[in-house]
Amino acid sequence: LADVAKAQGKTVEGLKSAITDAATKQLDAAVTAGKLTKDQETKLLAGLATRLDEIVNGTHEGGFGFGRGHGGWKDHDDHNGAAPAPATPAPAAPADVAPAPATA
Image 1 (cartoon, rainbow, N blue to C red):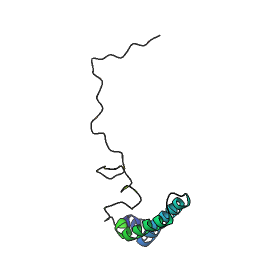
Image 2: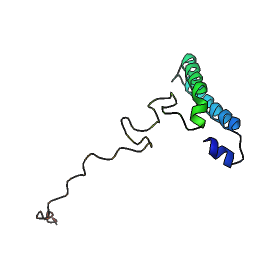
Image 3: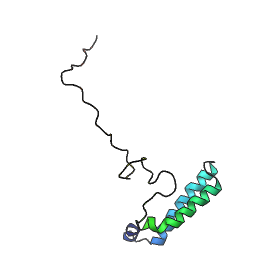
Image 4: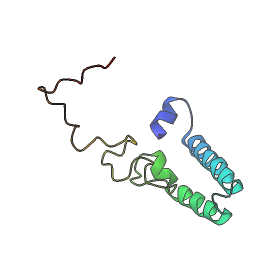
């Protein structure tokens, strides 16, 4: 993220500020909606502040403290947020089975 910010003519500090501001805004809304307590918000923001350099510099291995790791599917290996591929493909219909005749 730091490299992208620099390539866009932005500062790393500005990026960190934007991330913190966006997280604060979303967490404030969650507190207002009764989904989080103020204490929970404070702890989440403290965790974000602690790991912000790692997140921005691409050295952070875990999630942001807002739920399930990277926000993707639980127990999914590639951590790209996509749904996991099925373990086995669905079986194809046998070739020797003809479709049912249409009724009039």
